[in-house]
Length: 82
Image (cartoon, rainbow, N blue to C red; front, side, top):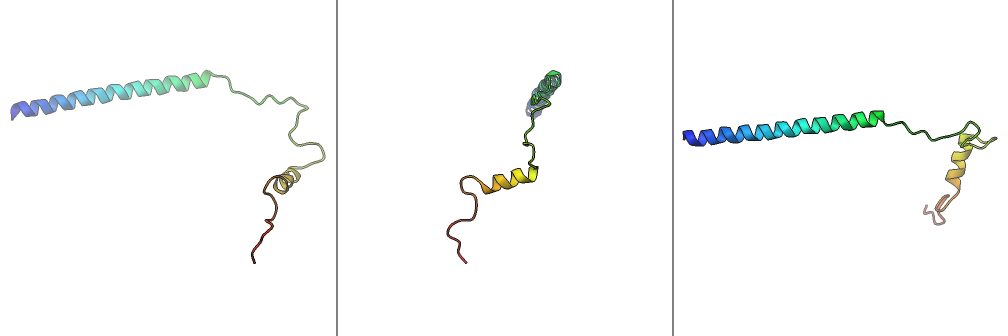
């Protein structure tokens, strides 16, 4: 009975040690990954001052209306049941 209890304590000690080591390694990996992302330069879309996405004379509302009314599958279906 004493030998079995001793084996259980050894197994518990070994499993806790392995889990602790793995936890420390995961924390170290996450820390270095975070630091690497922090030092990496942020990417910008590189727009120059004269470039715009909305053409002059149009508003965002006009662009949304155009995108909803043109293209494949847009508009009302031909067969509408009432």
